[in-house]
Length: 452
Ligand SMILES: [Zn+2]
Ligand SMILES: [Zn+2]
Ligand SMILES: [Zn+2]
Image 1 (tube, helix red, strand yellow):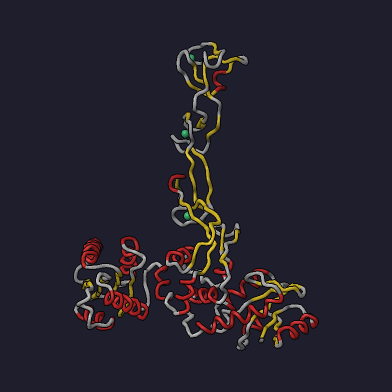
Image 2 (cartoon, helix red, strand yellow):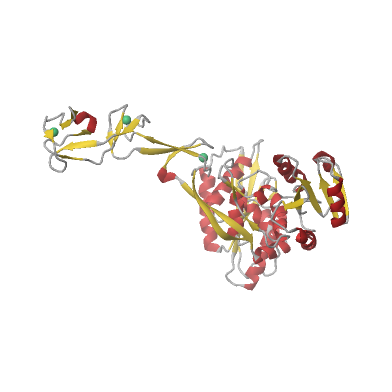
């Protein structure tokens, strides 16, 4: 077993123990020294003498992004005691754990690991018993974070969304509901400031008072205005108010605005998000559930046969997948249609013809937002060349396609097309068992795009 030990403290005793236990041990005295080496190790042991943030940084930036090392088990060593960086593992099980990770990884090592999503999925695959637990931390916007995921996550988009997407696709199961948090409806941050305001003028200069309601004349005012020589005297009709329930009572009002004089029953609660600075009311608050997740058997199979990668990219804003994944998905739809008569799918091809220099990126983003908001997470978008986009709508027949066509036409009609500068062409295809009988995905795609 080829193990690396990174330590900033010279401790020959620990090194000899490690050598005895792991057969082969390479010692590095700093993270920088390790980063320049090329060897492949089965596991990495890091001395806990290093600063915690330096260790996290090293794990994230050096190990979990490395093509050769991202999967290895990492252990922390503290005065000869081993603490697993990921889950608690007994010393006697350490070797077993390393071998098990190595063997499981062999089943999937030929896959593409260029994205953090693929890397973390294979990490979960090689640790079948691992539960992906959230940890609480006040420095995170959501107060919770997933230490396992943060080792891999590249910071591009909200990974909570990705986890949710994986659960929707049944790749993960939700093992336990850990918490439900109120959060900002705009950015989902839970870092919010609450303040109460006058419902009339919005001022924060309000205070709580006891109120009195005079039965003789109906006058309502804070108690302080009725006080005269230790007794209640109505400032309006001058009646002496002696008995509660007979002369006066306590109305529901209990707030006074010091700026506009307004009396109110309830002040208005205003919330400002500390992350995005937006202001909103309690009715607008979002609620977000925090779960403990686990890889499902179905998810394990999807990872093993590398089919999850074709769907996980839809978690990105664009609903966009690489063309080879698109073709893979289209092939799948064709096979389904061949077997089941009403397993229809539809395609939309779109070409943007430009006469001047013009960025189609914004247009694509807008268009993908339309897809995302109007359609389903199972719909896909890909790019055939720089100006030609293709959209796949699984489980959508001719009727469904017509509805999509209307939506697309409305969208295209609503964007400002400066005539003469560019033009958009669309082509539509809806499957039946007959029209795909002799076709494969490449032929269908080229038939469709050739008409553009
Ligand atoms: Zn006011
Ligand atoms: Zn009165
Ligand atoms: Zn916000």
